[in-house]
Length: 98
Image 1 (cartoon, rainbow, N blue to C red):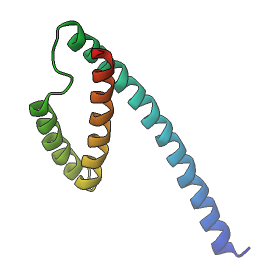
Image 2 (image 1 turned 180 degrees about the vertical axis):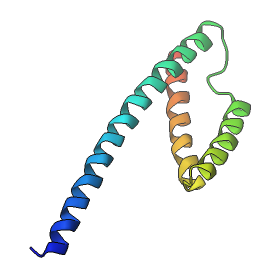
Image 3 (image 1 turned 90 degrees about the vertical axis):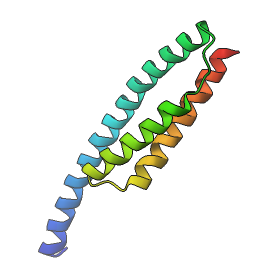
């Protein structure tokens, strides 16, 4: 292995270790978020509220779009990610309503 390839391998290892730590942060963050959304779902079910709130979802999408721009993240990626999460939350809320 050349010196340049060895340096690249060392840099690659460091990046991958950081990515692994960030993946763990994402998983724990999602778990915490879903604990709260499940509590919201139980409250909605107990009080006969609809499982989704389109107005809030629209505000969240706009907010996330702004945050993504500030963070230099592709806003479309951020919106797709939030749309997936919202879909899962609504699915959980609908399940609690049954």
